[in-house]
Amino acid sequence: MENHILDCVIIGSGPSGFTAAIYAARADLKPELFTGLEPGGQLTWTTEVDNFPGYPDGVSGPEMMLQLQKQAERFDTKISYELITKAEFSKEVGGIHKLWAGNREILARTVIISTGATAKYLGLEDEKKYSGGGVSACATCDGFFYKGKEVIVVGAGDTAAEEATYLAHLASKVTMLVRKGEFRASKAMINRVNATANIEVKYFHELIGIEGENSLVERAVVINNQTQEISKINVHGIFIAIGHNPNTEVFKGQIDLDENGYIKTIPGSTRTNLPGVFAAGDVQDHVYRQAVTAAGTGCMAAIDAERYLTDLK
Image (tube, rainbow, N blue to C red; front, side, top):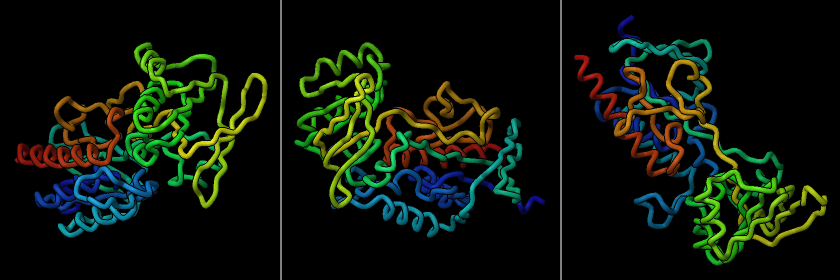
C-alpha cells in the first residue's frame, strides 16, 4: 500500500496550482495535479494578460496556462484531467489524506488546495457572448484596456466600490448600477465613490442586456426597476462586481473557512488548520485575486509542503 501513497497532490490548475506543481516537482515530491472541470481556471476566460511579469507583449490566458502546464510536466508532474469529488483529511501530523476522483481513491501525505474562486455573474446570455470583448469581473486585470473610455460597474458592495474607484483613474466616466436605493459597501468606500468626480451612481437600475458589434461591447441596456423605464448607455466596458464564490464546497466541514467560504491560512504561510494540507491562490485570497499573487502563494505552498515532509523524516 505504501507505494500508492503520493507525497503531494495538488487540486486545481490555475497559476497557483501549476506553480505549486513546478516547485513540488523540482523538490522531487513527484506531485499529481488534478485539473478539475476547468483546466487553467479563470484565466482561460481572459483574452489578454498584460500584467504578468515576463510577457512584454502580453499573452492570452489560455496560452499562459498551457505554458505553465508544460513547465510543470517538464519536471515530471503527473496531470490528471479529473475532478476531486470527495476529501477525507487526516487530523494527525504525518497522517494520510484521502481524496476521491469519482470512484478512484487517492492517498497523499500532503495536499495543496488551489481550486480558486468563481466570479459571480448576473446570468445574462449576453455576458457569455461579450466575455473577453468588454465584459469582465476584474478591474485590475482589464481596466487598462478602457483608458479614456466609458465603462459600467454593476454592484453595490465594497468590491463594486473598489472596482469603480480604480477604473475612475483610467476611464473617462464610470457609471455604477445599484439595484436598490443604497450601497451595501462600507462608509469609507461610499465616501470614496462620492468623492470621485467621474463616477455617476444610478440607483434602482439593473443591467438587462448588452449590445455590440463583432463581439465587442458598445451599449448597456438597463432598466429602472421602479419606473420600468428601459434605456441604453454607450459604453465600451461592463464590469460585473457582485462578488466571488470560493470553490470550497467539497472541503466544507473539515477545513477552517471564513464567513465567505474562503480557506483560512496561518498568516505568513499557506498552512491550514490541518497538518499537511495547504491552500494557495484565490481559494484563500479574497483581497488581491491576481495571477501573479496566486502564483506566489503556489510557490509558498510547495515549499511549505516540502518542509512539512522533511520535518516528518
